[in-house]
Image 1 (spheres, helix red, strand yellow):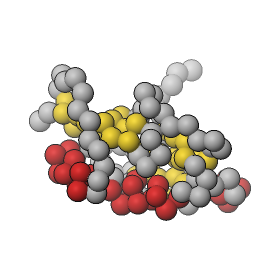
Image 2: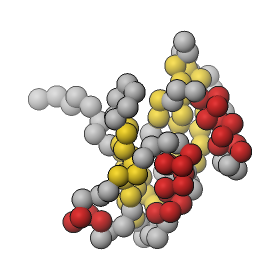
Image 3: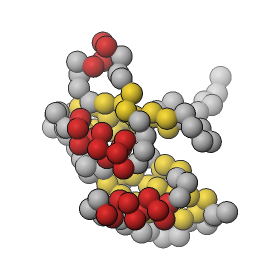
Image 4: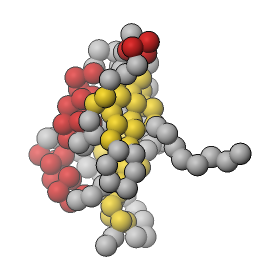
Length: 125
């Protein structure tokens, strides 16, 4: 037996903030919102998933009360067109944080609307 992939990442969000999650993850990052299974829908939160490009991206946001964002632990999301995405995020008022260089990549950090840290990185050509 061995682990072969990460199926999804789950992050915390406050109750009732699904519209803010959708505006950020689908509207700005371009990961479509997908329906949750009916038996999980009653818990709140929302799922964002995409199968295009080099692999699947699955980010699930689950309601926690109280909600504590992941400020150090984070998913790293591989991006195509990082510079353009950074400009779109800045124009939308999202703070961009640079960090130490990582060999072979351009990268930045952003927070989602709930304070969860996300790393956005693009391999050098």
